[in-house]
Amino acid sequence: MTSTRATAVLVPVLSVLLSFLVGGVIVVISGHDPLAAYVALLQGAFGSVFNLANTLTVAVPLMLAGLGVAFTFRAGLFNIGAEGQYWLGSIAAAWVGYAVHGLPVWVHLPLALLAGTLAGALWAALIPGVLKAWTGAHEVITTMMMSYIAINLARYLIEGGPMMAPGYTPQSPAVLPTATLPALVPGTQLSWGLVLAVLAAVAVWFVLYRTTFGFEVRAAGLNGRAARYAGMNVARIIVLAMFVSGALAGLAGAVQTLGVNHRLFDAFNAGYGYTAIVVALLGKNNPWGVLAAAVLFGALNAGASAMQMQAGVPAHLVDVVQGMIIFFIAVDGIIRSVLRRTRKEAAQA
Image 1: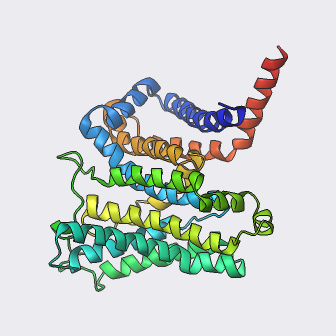
Image 2: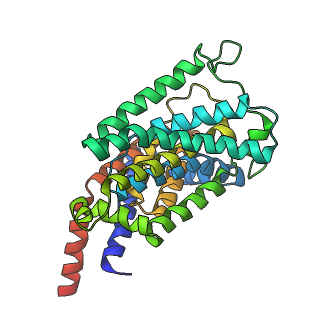
C-alpha cells in the first residue's frame, strides 16, 4: 500500500477514534463510565442477530445515498440535495406500490424500484445538473432548493393531499404485497435492500475505475479545464454524474419505502440524505469506504438506546460523536499534516 493510500485510510480511522475519545471525555465529565457506555453501544449495535439487523437496516439507505453523493464528489460536484432525491424516490415508489394493481411480484416490485430510481435521477439531473452544465449555476444552491421543494411536496401529498390514506394520520396507503421488498432476516426490518446496496457499490466501483465514463468523471473532478482541453464533454459528464447520484438517492428512498416503511408517511426528520454527505466524506468517496461508514452510522443510531438503558448515558451522546466525526473530517488537513510530520521524524530517526 502506497503512502497516499495509507493516509487515505488512516485519516478517517483517526477521525472516528478521536471522535469516540472526545465522547468518552464528555461521558466522564457527566459522571458516567465511558467503557460501560461504549460496551453497551456495541452490544446494542452488534450484540445479537436482531441488533445487527437493526444496524444494517439504518445503514442501507445511507449506503445508497452515500454512494450517490460520493459519485458527484468524484466529478467535482457538491450534490447536497440527496435528501430531496431520496424523498422523490420514496414518493414515486409508494405511488407505484399501492396504486398499480394486477401485476405479479416479479413485475410490480422492479417497477416500483425503477420508478423511485428514475424519480431521484431526474430530480437531480433535469434542473441542478442542466443548470450547472449550461449556465454555471452552483449545484449547492440548486440542490438545496430542490430538497426543500421535494420535502414540502411529500408533505402536501400525504397531509390532506391526493396520496393521503383515509383517516387522520398523514400517510399514504400501504404498498401492495407484490411491491414489498421481502425481509432478508425473518422477524426484522432488514430487507433485500442490503443486497441491492452492495450490488450498487460494486457497480459504482466498476463504473468509476473500469470504464471510460468513470475515467472522464474522475478527470473532470480533478481538473475540469484540463478535461475540457483533452476533448471531454464536461457538460455531459456533469449531467450524467448528477443523474447517477440522484438515481442512487432515489433508490435509497424506494428501498426504505418498499422494504421498511411500506408506505409514505410523515417522517421528514430521518435525514438520510443529509447524513449521506458525511458518510461519503468519511468513506473518502470510495464505494467500499462508503459502505463501512454507513455501517458505522447505523451502529451509532441502533446502539444509542441500548447505551442509554444499560449505562445510563443519554442517547444524545451519539449526536455528539457524530458531530465530532464531522469536525475531524473538516480538519482533515491537520490530521494529514500530523501524519506527514510523524513519518518525517520516523524517517530521520
